[in-house]
Length: 144
Ligand SMILES: [Zn+2]
Ligand SMILES: [Zn+2]
Image 1 (cartoon, rainbow, N blue to C red):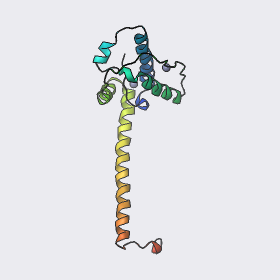
Image 2: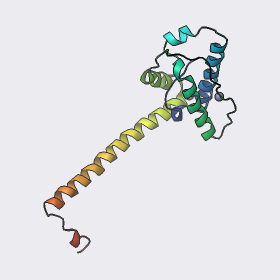
Image 3: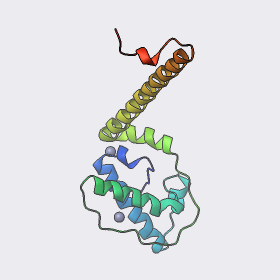
Image 4: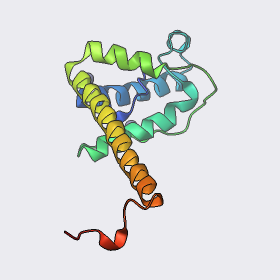
């Protein structure tokens, strides 16, 4: 049982449904008073975030057109466990080709988006500088 805590959009269907199922298993263990100490120590679960995480996964499951009928009923919860998301991204990329593809695409898009934002910002700033120097006269724009 393991909660990845990475952006649900980056999970392949199998890992999305898998993590959702395992969150219900964690809840099952808590209700039955079965110890999840080992999972907490390994950073596989954040007990205080189980319900919030479940609902995010459920939302993504529904967004992908799949059924979700298992609500996460409130249960005993306490502050325990820290999940390392960066570590989990690396681990999941190693384990699953489909997740790897989604994560790499997302990283590429983020890099491109940043580059584009830089370019646009620079252009706008250059325009402002030119305007302030009188190098662009807006009245004449588009002529010639
Ligand atoms: Zn559910
Ligand atoms: Zn996967």
